[in-house]
Image (cartoon, rainbow, N blue to C red; front, side, top):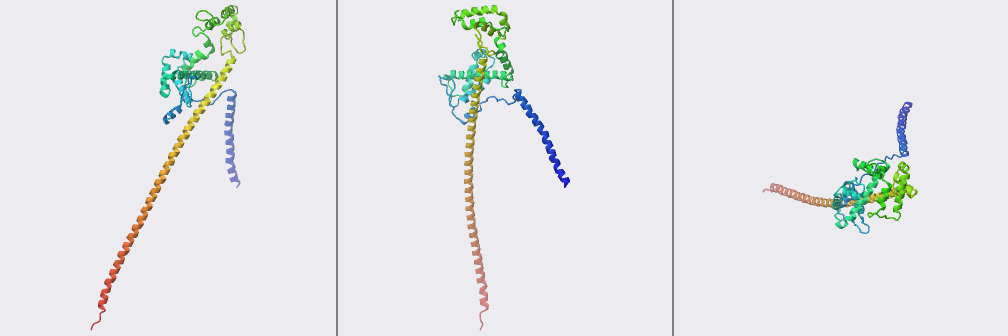
Length: 371
């Protein structure tokens, strides 16, 4: 008995030891996860790119789309506005080049881009007309700028290139748009722009007059500050901002004369708030798309259930019909068997009667008396 108990206890101890061994890697994994969270490394799987499968499903079902472009809003409205926006996102990702500094330069740098985008959207949405062209392009411009901003935010937070952006496009954006120094410096000479030239370009009209009353006075002050504080301006992190600050004065969280995000903390906070608002809008749009997809799935399951119910009813009716036919055949079979049996009995009775009559004639002739 003791041997049996020891044999039973031995696997149990082995199981406990194995649990201890497996618990150690789990604890180590938990500690590693805590370390990654503390260091700011996020291992969560990023959201995939939009492919707008909802439009394909709606077209397959023949659902008419409610898409409108009111002139007073100059943007897409209607019950299926989110479907159109998702398709614009796909179109922007595929057709709109990233190697331009601003949207207004895209047609000049890449001729035919707008017509290609319009043709693609017109093919996907026959509901839009030529009268909606300006509103459609305005919607495309908004979402193009949103994409550029989302890419910029990704660069600032993770530095990781998204899979849907080509390496050369990503590097071009870094070199020409997202690097504060590269963006502010002259790309050919590498020199910072002069505050005098910036002031003249912003506030001097084409006819040589000033758009503000003290434009000429501030220009003279900028020229004097450039000579007096030449070394201080050159040694500043952003000489342009320092030059304007010496003349126009300093203001908390603001760069006087020209807005520069690198030194404008208030603007950065507004950018973050705007980014959170856009992220919330995107999540709401995704939730609407998911709700629409779920509604379509429920409708599809309901149709399949109704079809299955009809098939079961048809099979039940067919089974009842076959059962009735079999019962009728059984009744006919029993009737035929009774009829055959009755005929057989009648024939047998007739034979028996005939045999009895034949046997009675000889017996009567033998019993006749003689004289």
